[in-house]
Length: 257
Image (cartoon, rainbow, N blue to C red; front, side, top):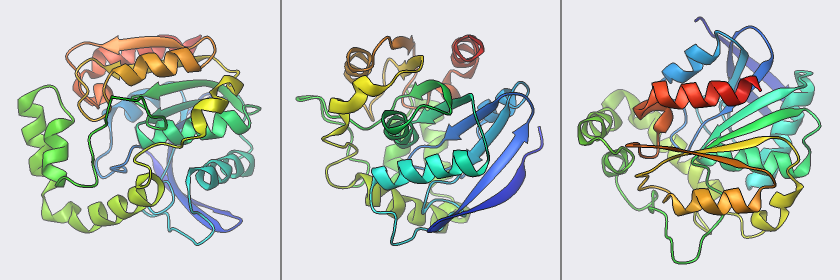
């Protein structure tokens, strides 16, 4: 499926994005690594939906500006993006940092949102359940931690150290740290507002996630009204990559509702 590169100029920022497919709109929000490699999942989704995959501020081709300081700013920027593109009935799929961004959007306004599919989202803290400190370990070590399958983890580690990715990986890590450095990958106020989410929500989590432990899945399920939980067996932090067929079957069923 062919995706076209586009830029959208918004107040205070320009957002780079890729768009492809046809149907109802689907917004995909990437994780802390950005999109250095294109996920097969997006090609599959573009067979049924109009898929919009923006680079979050500071990631990829989207420049960071002084007006974007934290995840609340990212949320308002994404709301501006939905408005600028005149999108309604949007299915939002967010992974990790992108799942956190999706939550920050939804607690502010769900007027343009059809549903939320959250894949191992960050954003909250569970006492006694530390996340992996992705800012203090090397990219290859992080890649190994992210997969349940050791061979997939090793292959990801080798890709992470490839020279062609180094410059962009550094910029992506700087952007991720801007939003998730202190405190690590969460907003202390977010969990108090998750009750405001009023759209159908399903949480997808790998049962051996070593980046954000699966105990967070149950916490999100409790905090988001009516949320459903889909645990993906034999998967780490990237169930949509590591167990793509099973994840896509469950995700597709949810999005079609």
